[in-house]
Structure formats: C-alpha cells, structure tokens
Amino acid sequence: MKIPYLEFPKQLNFRTLDAFRQTLESYEKTSHIGIDFRAAKWGPPFFLTAAAISISEQKARTGQRMSCINFEHCSYFAHMGFFKSFGLPFGRSPGEAKGNDNYLPINIINSEEIRKEAHAKSIAVGLLMEIKAERLAKILSRSEEGVLVDALTFSIREMFRNIIEHSEADRIAYCAQAYPNKGHVEVGIFDVGIGLRSGLEENKKLRFQTNSEAIRCALMPGVSGKAEKVKKLRMKDEWTNSGYGLYMTSRLFRDHGSFSVGSGDAAIFLSGADLIPAPWKMKGTAIRLVLEVDKLTDLEARLNEYKREGARLRQQHGGMELAEPSVASTTLARNFAQRRENRR
Image 1 (cartoon, rainbow, N blue to C red):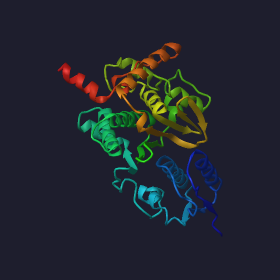
Image 2: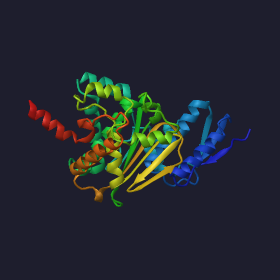
Image 3: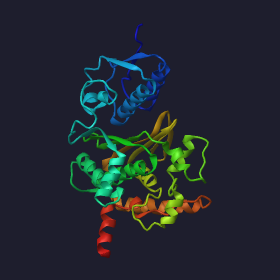
C-alpha cells in the first residue's frame, strides 16, 4: 500500500498550522502516513511546538505509524526538539539542548514534580514557579535585572501557575526565542489539560456556549473557576490564584507586543486595540507572548494601571462573582517579598 505524504507548511502561523492539522486529521483512519518537510523553512517556536503536539496527539490517539522525509535541512526544528517530541529519531530530545542567549528549545515540566518540590522546600508553588520563570527571563533578556527581566518573569510565572493550579494537565511544555535584531522576544506555553472552558465551569455560576466565549471571559479580571475557594481564603495568601494573572498578562502584552491564547476549538490574537479570532483546534490551552522590547518602560506603573483598570471592570460587571486581586497576580514578586520582610 502506498503511503500518503502530507506536505509540512513552508511557514507556520495560525492559518497554515490549522490547514496542516485538518489535513492530518483527514488521514487519521489511515494506518501509516508520511510527512514531507521539503518546503519547510521556518517555524516560530510557538507554532513549531503546537505542530509537534498535534502530530504527537494524533499518533497517541490513533496508533498511526508516521514516516518523515526531506527533513535533514530543518536544523532549527531538530535543535528545538521538534522531531523527537513525536518520535522521529532526529535532532535533540525536548529539553536536551541547553539553548543559548537567543532561544530556549522545547522543554517539559512535570506538574506533580513541581508540587512535590514546592512541598519539600516548604514554599508556595507560585514562588517555585517564580524562580523557574526568572531563570528563563534572564536567558532571554541577556541580563540579570531590569524591566525586561521583570516583565517576562511576572508573565511566565502567572502562565505557569494557571496551568498547574487550574488545567489538571500533568505537564507544561514551553519554548522561547529572542530576536535581538528585530527587538522582540517570543514565549510559547502549552498544556494538554481540560482547557479554559472546563476550568472556568468548575465555578457553577459560569456557563458558556462556545470556547471562544470562555476565552474572552477568562481574560476579564477576577474570573476564576475556583471563585468559592478564593472567597473563603479572603485573599490572606498572597499567592492565591484569583483570576487576575491572565488578565494582567494579556493587558501587558497587547500594549507592548501581542498576546494570543488558544483553547479547544478557538483562539484569539490581541495587539493594541485589535482582537482577532484565529483558527485553532487543540486539547488544553496554549499561550503565545510576544514582547516588543523598546515599547516596555516602567513595568510597575503599567501593572498598577492595569490593576486600577481591572477594578473599574469589576464594578461594571458587578452581576458576576469576581474575586478580589491577590498580591502575586498584580505585583512584582520582589515588591511583595520586600513588604513581607519589612513586616518581620
């Protein structure tokens, strides 16, 4: 039987990734298929990881055999861990390459191991993720401190926390790329968990007709599937996940680059005043952060501005049960750590 070969996209973006995924799915009842990388030239890390997850998930779901041809020139893909992530013995394994000042290859964090490590060290999961996010931020920033390190640390930490505390995913996949000549940094973060809609609907007062509705709701300040738990804690714990991390991060990146989120069968792209639906279909949740470095100035002032804006939005949507912001979800960790030290 002749193996059907699917052509991998020349360039990866929302449109080409979705077209490739649809073609891939159309052959899911075929026992053996192939992927031809002859035309492949470039794939930003977010879309590269998304493609790898789509291929891997289909293989796991269907038990298909997959062959690849004409991939030898894809050295960036190989070094990022793309091929080995779905079983092709070519290049690095996810997390194997150390990366350099410009990029971090596909890495995978085990959620349960994070919880165990935090417990063993007697620290909050959020603080542990802060440490890991800061390491990533310093590599991409080529600096030990500064506004770029702070912005990336804050945002990556909040995305990691959301996944560990809400998604029920056993793993987090992430990757990153700095483009010094173009003046921007990109981070991709993925889970294959329950998705935003199911996570939010743990709050019995939240129900959605579509994943797109759920995504838009998740970007509002104070919206959480754990609203009752947050209310009972009365925000005494500065690391309480109050539903502000996603809102604050989306505001920061849409003002200083772009923010994209996909969950289930929907995705949106945010940049400035633009909110654009994008084609998507993937289990769990995926976040793409693109930060234009030159646009970033006083981060603390920006976060305070977004917090005030969030308070106004909470008042406008008083009919919903919205949580108060926790300290961690609206503040730089070094600031509230200093306040905690001063209280001793």
